[in-house]
Amino acid sequence: MSFAVVWIDLEHAKVFHFSGDQMKREEVRASYVDHHTHKFENDERDSQPMYEETAQLLSSDKRILILGPGLARSHFLNYLKEKHEKTAQCVQACEPSDHPTDSQIAAKALEFFGAQAKRNG
Image 1: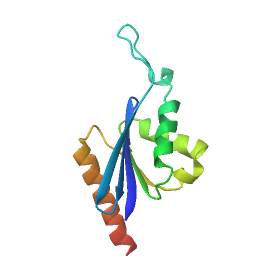
Image 2: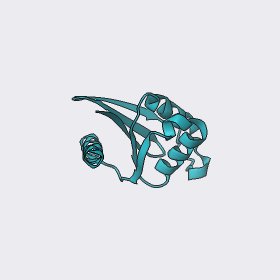
Image 3: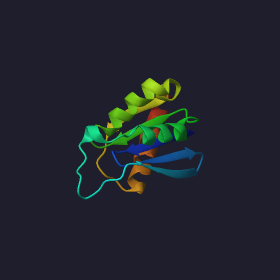
C-alpha cells in the first residue's frame, strides 16, 4: 500500500509519502519574502512556484490526500487540475485541516487510506 498526503497553506507544504512501513517527509516553502512593513493580501502572494514544486514531489504517487486550512488546499487542487492532470486524477480527497502536528497528519493519512482499503475490499 503506497500513498501520499500533503498538508498545504499559503506559506508551505508538507508532503508525506507512505510505502509499506516506511514514511518519507518533505517540505516546500513559499519563495516570497514577507516584510514586517508590508502585509500581503492572499491574492498578492505568488504560490505557483510552491505549488509546482509540491506537484513535482507528488508526481509518482498514485493515491493522494490533500489537507489544509482556508482556500490553499482548493487552490492547490485547481493548480493540479490545470497543470498536472495526471497527478490531479490521483487525488482521493481534499479536506479541511487547521494546523496539525506531523504525527496528526500521518495518522489522518493512515486512517483515511486504511478505511479506503477496507471499503474497496
